Amino acid sequence: MALIARSTSASNPGPRLTGVDNRATVRPGGRSQRLMDLIAPADLRLCRLMSSLRAGRESRNAQAEVVIADTEGPRRALAQRTADGLRDWLCRDGRPHFSLVRRRLQMRVQHAGLVRTLSRLPVGELSEAQRRGIANALIDVGARSKTVGGLLGLPPSTLRMINPLALRDRLMSLEQLSVLQDPALSPIARQNRRAEAYSRAVLVGERFGYSARLPPWKFIPATPGCARITLLKELTSSLEANRRGLDVQLP
Image (cartoon, rainbow, N blue to C red; front, side, top):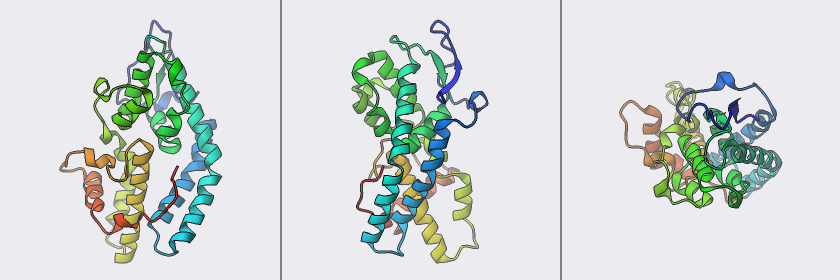
């Protein structure tokens, strides 16, 4: 199971969820990775359709519906695998059976979606300690605490504080930032790139339980030196942000 870093006994719960990247303990490849490899190009296509000015709205909606339908199966399968891993992760008293790989969990939620994943959890069969542990793990990787608490039947006040900064690399990579800052881009190319980057960031935020009106960076204080968050805040009130022109329910 790709959520597993290594097995532990219930009496030896292993490392707690921290900022440590456990990639070295994860076996490469696997079915979950193949599912994400199928989903990622579709997400890029959706972002380009949202920010495009080349085709009419009806045409873009029709194209988006095809893209969404083509990846419904992989998204459903990935969400189920992720839910199964979270279900099996903790004993009823909240102690872990195995250590959780935060980066892998975050990538799965980005591709499958928080709501889709948690809707596949047998919430009624889980103890409060299990639900709280799962909720806090998801909040650690950037999920909105209010959304997680609502889906798992837990008051947000009993959960960890919201941690949207954990999504910074998912919202915009350093490579994307470099492209957007390239002085060689023409004004039109820059506008198109900025619109696409904004659409992608909003889509990622929605996958973690945020909304287009209240994206993750709205909850992050202005931080000098954090160019990606600063740019996203700037784009929120830009013309490029108004290009999100699709009338279909995005996955």
